[in-house]
Length: 400
Image 1 (tube, rainbow, N blue to C red):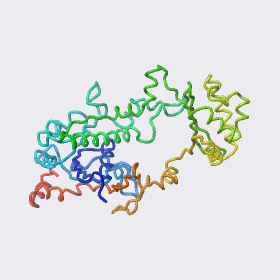
Image 2 (image 1 turned 180 degrees about the vertical axis):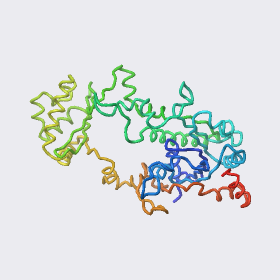
Image 3 (image 1 turned 120 degrees about the horizontal axis):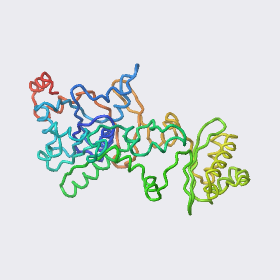
Image 4 (image 1 turned 135 degrees about the horizontal axis):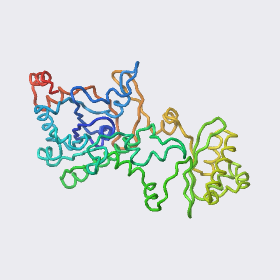
C-alpha cells in the first residue's frame, strides 16, 4: 500500500536529530525526502560508531528513508541545483542557526521567489528572536534552559540532564506536526508559509501543566521521587523497589481507588497505623510524606514487583515496572504493537530500531534505511537533466 504522504516532496538541509527525526517520520509515511549534505558529510554520521559495528545507530535512526545528495552550498553551481530541486517541492527545511541559511542563499525569502507555495521550516535552538537567537544549541541545552532538568533526581542530588534526548525528540515531533499542519493549510488554500520552531520552545511546551502550575500558584516544583497533587482530588505518582531491587511506579488519582489498592495488596492496616492511608493525610506535611514512603519502602521490599503489580492492577491502580532501555525494547506490549521493528540493512544485515508510534490501517508506515553519503547524487541530478559529463565535472569541481 502507498504511504499516506506519498507524493509529498521534501528538500532538507538538516543535520543531527532535532529536524531529521521529523522528516524520517515523513519518510516512514511515504514522503520523498531528499537530504542535502556537504561533500564531507555531516558529523552525525560518525556519532556512536564503535569497533565491530560500522554504522551509527544515531544517524541510521534519524535519517532512515532519505535520499542523499551532496552539495557545497557555498558554490553557485550547488545553489543552482538546490533551486532546481526546490522548484517543484512541497517542503524545504533547515536547522542552521539563524542567519546561516540566508548567507548560503537558501533563506525563506530566497526560496519563496522560486516556489511561492513552499512550506519552509526553520528550526533553531533558542527561537528566531531574543538575545541568544544566533547561538548554537543542543538537546542538553534545551533540557537545561527549559526547566525539565529539575524533574530528574531527588532534592540534594546533583542537577543533571536525562540520558535520553528529550529535547531533540520533542522538537522533532513538533516539527513533524508543524509541517503536516502547514501542508493541510496549503491543501486548502494553495498558500505555503514560513514556520519557525526551536529546541527551547518545544521543551517549554513539553513542560505543559507543570509549567502552568508554577506560573499560576508561584509554587516551585520539588525534586523528588514523589509527584504529589493535593486538593479536592489528590493524586500521587511515586516509585518503589521490590525485594530484588527492581523498581516500579504507582500513579493513583482519588482516595477510593487508592484505598481499594491498599486493601487488595494487604497494606492498608500498616499504613493506617502510621496515619498515611489517605492521600489527603499524606499531603498534610513533608514529614507525613516521608513516613508514607519509608513505610511502603519496607513493605514493598518483602516481595517481587510482579506480585505487587498484579495486586495493584487487579484493584485498577495504575502501576507498571520501571524498565531499563533493554527491558523496554522487549516489553510484550512494545513487541505486540511493533514499537520496535526489524529492518534489513545492506551492510550489516538485520537491525532492530524504534518503530512507529501510530498505526495507520489503510496507509501503513514503512521504515527505510539511512542513505550512504551522496548515494543518490547521480539519480537526482539525472532527473534534473544533468548529463553524465556535467555530473563528472561537478564532482571534479567539488560542487557535489
